[in-house]
Length: 286
Ligand code: GUN
Image (tube, rainbow, N blue to C red):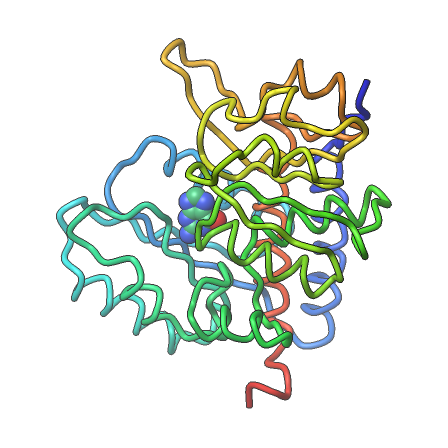
């Protein structure tokens, strides 16, 4: 039976560390890390995520603000707000909550953000830095997965890692992060042929396809470490990951639960990125 990786506890530890560094920063330089979240429309899941991010900021003594905009706001209005925030010295992090309404191009909005304030790590500048092996802000969910492995003492070097899911938010950046940590990475997806054959190769299996219970027990090697990034709401309102938890927990050595695994880590890494942004610009960006 697998050992459960407690993302809630690990995220709490990270928040404590962030808070202590934020207190030091305020004492030494008077700077209070500031985050603005831009929320367009009223997607219920986004509302919950944003509330969580704001309450995290309060816990670690950051300044935070939510820019709430109606669902029919046009791109030029959002661009104007981002521009103002880019020049606002009290704001170190800007996050545009996704998904955006269909009439708004998310890539265009993300490119408007000053890369130094792109605490989501989604701006092409930050993605490019990750790909060239010199990262600045790293995308929060994949960075959270790595942190879970590191803080659980799971070795990454030399391991066969299989990631199911190729999104810009998780799969693609996570592949780069793991590659730079010397894993042998396979990036596959729901259209991969013989997916179970591929997933069974994994020493570390990461499910990030956004498809409820895609990964069953037969798709997992005995003793594998399984990280479930999925968050899927079933018709009966039950929240499940991309992994059939009960079956896979029988075979895995370690597993993350849903909720309480990767989710809290995404939020914790957002705080880490915002703190880094407030602490100053690395030399390579000046
Ligand atoms: N929506 C779901 N996850 C995320 C995330 O990590 N960042 C942003 N901006 N939106 C999201």
